[in-house]
Image (cartoon, rainbow, N blue to C red; front, side, top):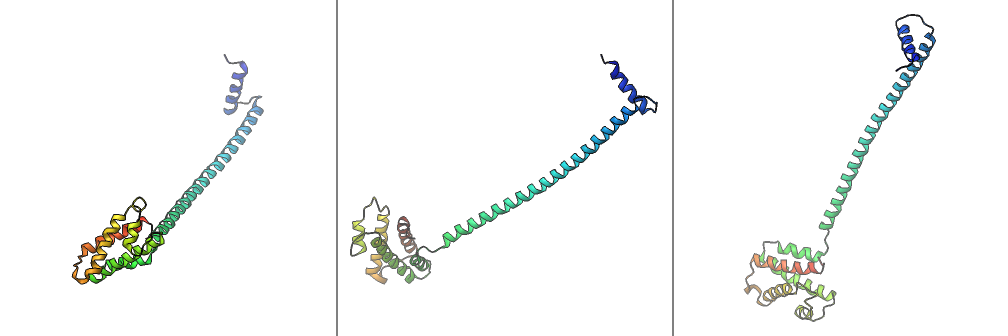
Length: 193
């Protein structure tokens, strides 16, 4: 099955390892030298690969950390910008009206409703609705283009009751807040606040 040279090779290796002199001793030393070189080169390559793996692992961890930190920073900036958008006053008049409406004083609620009505008339005039009074402007409005027109009419009726009856008209906090909410919905439809 195996050639005689094959057996001879292993016999020579055995004789050399057992200290038996043989003519193949030179071959043994050559093979031993090659084996030593291969072992040293293999160990050197293994050490280089191990160092490379450790370096890449550390580098990858730093990159992941930097990327995560960058993502956190981007989210933080986006959150701050989003918060700034919501805190930015789009219409200072509305802010003043909201402040009056949040008061505990009935006189402030009345003033908030009257100011909101004036603001509504100004907004409609800016949007091209014609008429001498807010009532005239609302009569000219197209319900298909002004979906909160009924709400605007309700708020305007409350304002008229306050203006014409004055202190004789009892204004509850609930009615005041509901009326201001109606104005808010109209202004939001037109992206005015």
